[in-house]
Length: 268
Image (tube, rainbow, N blue to C red; front, side, top):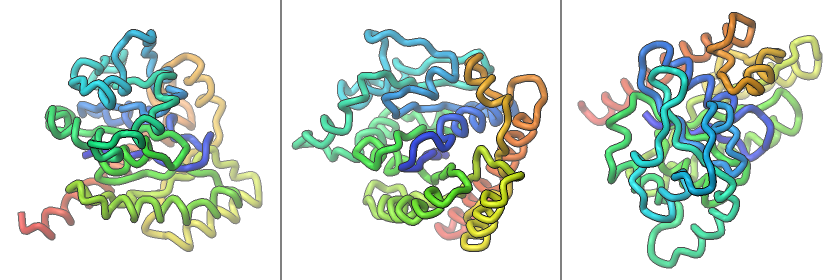
């Protein structure tokens, strides 16, 4: 199961969601890989992976045909692994679009398939950059489903239309994957704010089946965990720990339901 964590807005909790959800699944005994696709390498840093410019990363996988196995690093959490990014990804979209031979938006999909990466992990998370570019297209084209973290504000609410349209377009990629929206996840939610509550209700009303019941509320434990390079779900018990535990449970329910529907549709 490959899940892209995507929104074309920055700072809405994509990396935090990818890392904590992956860590939550690893805590439950699953083997999980996070692939950082972003030049800001926030997920890489959050997982405590320090890479130099010469160390293998996702950049080498995309542009030097490196076997992803050679760029995957273990983390301090058992069962949790990271294929890191670095600042070299800054020009990745431009390089992808200049490729006259390979399909620019299918390189990640092709690499994962060629080297059998999906067969080795129960869950793979793709932490996407904020731009809707060739790098994000690679992630969406390689994924089975997508989580869209967002804030309960007017800007995020308005931008959901474009995000959902991008996911629907990626579903027609011809790669053999048909990505689906797994759910919209409200992050950094401040329930004391009337506007936030109103926007949450509007999103849940407009997209009841496509919005996670779990809401990640604002918590000091999250920035603290980022500073310590340890997922909040692995830190001492806090509201953030409970929220991500709930998210992990809901993610499992949603993905198992998706698997079941896919098997029925295909006759398996």
